[in-house]
Image (tube, rainbow, N blue to C red):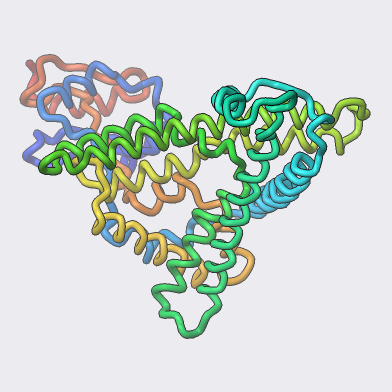
Length: 385
């Protein structure tokens, strides 16, 4: 190990040896965890090797984000986008125009809840088919998808409009690539289930309860009640969409050659939509935004939310300045939490490691074999306990 890999702390730290990040990775078997524990037990400095970049890495790190593998990742993203859009229209239109007597019967929460009401309002022989839940679910999904497509087209319009300010146009670019296109790649009615997953529901419910408690005269109770009712509705609709798609995918491919590639496409799309119920990449990225911009309380206020939106807009502007054309598009399509970590953190490359005993340590400990010489040198410069 070269001397460059080893540094010495300041005099106030009793000249405690430090180990570079590279050395820490390459000599993991030689690191004495007991020594590191005692070094940080009394006066922890666990984050001394990192700091948050005040410019968010926009002026220095953006050019280092590109790698050739992003071409493949961006291509796969566009493939799944096209497959999902095609499947949404074909499967839902087939369900909408299919006669109800050709449709297999299966359990639906919507049907179970409305059936007693329909019996009372319109009793008859075919009252159970009056609503046609599968058709209603398909119609709702198509309507939601068309609404998202309309918003996407409006965002594209804002990007190309010359009368819009530079700020508005770059905000639109960030919204298009970081929110709308990722949503279109996995969108389905099952997406409503994301609101009731524990990872999303519990923080949102906690925030709503805290907001309601801060309001005088129970003014926050209606907002909390609407939140709870909406989550119940989301679960009912999302669960029924899952049942409809599950049965429609299997029933629609019944009798086809299982060895044909075209037979597997509906199942791949269904799997993609299932995995997209909770978009892990977007969720982790949002949690990082809350961690950086949300402060100690972990709640994004209006000014903090505006700051993170400004960061994304500036990021889009810097990316297209550094990588104009297709490379900029590919980079934004594949932007991830790993990229944000590279931008937001500056690594000093030095991790404090205690080779010998410091002035406030309870015992001394040394590294083995290859570090013995360094250990003896450090022990001679620090007092033994």
